[in-house]
Length: 396
Image 1 (cartoon, rainbow, N blue to C red):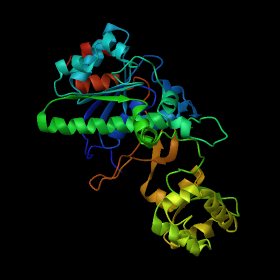
Image 2 (cartoon, helix red, strand yellow; image 1 turned 135 degrees about the vertical axis):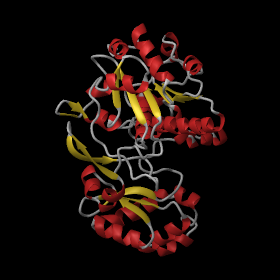
Image 3 (tube, rainbow, N blue to C red; image 1 turned 120 degrees about the vertical axis):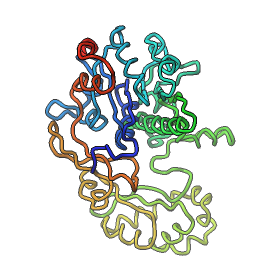
Image 4 (cartoon, rainbow, N blue to C red; image 1 turned 60 degrees about the vertical axis):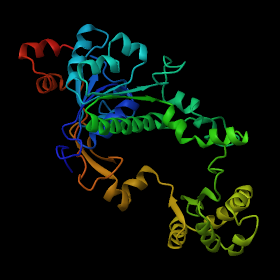
């Protein structure tokens, strides 16, 4: 693993003027490939995520995962002094990421047009509840709101249960990933033109794109997708099934050849010729039959035996893993999980970067920053000012 100095984004300066989850995850993605990410936080309080549970020895684990290896600088954006400090840093940044409503950015003169005037090549990425345009542009929004308005919550769950929000930061993390992608596209354009650009991500929008089939379906057929549990209602058979030892596994028959092999394994080889099950459209209409067959077949075997028979026959199946299962799995240990050696949190495992590059071994994670820990050091590195001026600016 690396300290990031040999990463593809080494020497890229990112100013993260944001808290909570979505925008910091965008900074996290860039950090994972070597970017120098400086996080602006409020004095005394810092990022709201510093208080999120679970807490270990006074430190938030969710905050740590999003902010390992970043640098923390304190600045009060509600004061002219704090706004000046952020603007000075923005003049030396390649990327500025913000997560405030348009009215706040306007009052602080931190909009794209304000920043690009002093730094024509800067890429400014804004993550807001509803985007920088449209009638709802000044409404506040969080991940739970995005789950709801995107259409996701209405299709998540079972027919007999209420609409269900995601039990983790799905909308935030999806928006953060979309922001990172937008930043990289803007940086590629800058490499061709030398010009900066603005990235505008609404918190709900990437999630709405992911569930966009429900909108296309409604506008072409008039059908409103309903909650259907583990069934996707687009292909069959797909589901989650319990084995005789209590373990759970998933089977996906999203392909004609796979379905034929699955029918062979579970003892219904003739079904692939039956008009009720011979095409995907017919299988979706008769999905209850297939669910019953697979449920009964899996229930008669241990999870390990069932998975072995399925995968050995080229059928797409996998265990429903707990965190304990994941950290003991040799595949994930080899390529997905990284070992964190933190002086604050001790030694732990967590997923690393969202992608692998042949040219970069990956980042070694150390510690999340203490609030304001790097204020003076960043000012010395980024700004061409005297020690006396650093002392003045460092007061936040």
